[in-house]
Image (cartoon, rainbow, N blue to C red):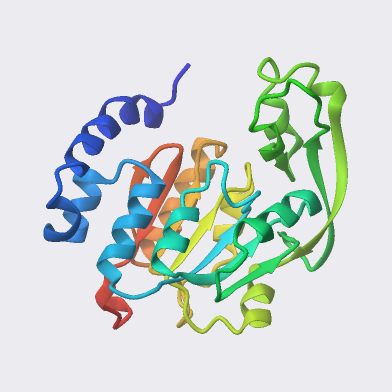
Length: 257
């Protein structure tokens, strides 16, 4: 049965999409109003934020996969010359990620996952097989149940579930390692661990992001409410762009264009 957020998105997001394609909306109406009227998916949000910034933005992407499939930032990064750090823990996907951004300066890559500790962590994934859906390599998570929720969509999934040891670091370690004194946007797509990543972000730090886009579809209602409540208390406004959530702070908070 569809959740309330999914039912809301089924009628609200198509309406937002139609409004967003009215050319003048992306630049001329106030950002807060644009979000409520026109923010229909993560890619649209990223493009309009980039247009309004008037400069290359600094970003962190957690769970980059190959940097292309279902990636709302790929074209924005290349078009607007964004700089930042991209993380992908699985070696094969990491190699593809680096290759897909070859020749674009200002990008750093981490073959690691954000976890609750620095060191090594166990990730669950599906052993690939010919004939799989093209998105099957995105099914990697610290939570086995998130992977198993796709039973019926991937043949023989339960028997093909494997454990992989990957490099891990915390978000504070990432910030320190890369000297991130300013982050404009954080994007997470980590199959059920997004609330943990967002929870590690120091929302009071000078580098705290103006924008957060995180996957919400694998969060239970209580977890999502807790994550959203923490963001709202820190001065963020939240918008449902199912299957993701957008959280943003007014630009004046940062003294940025």
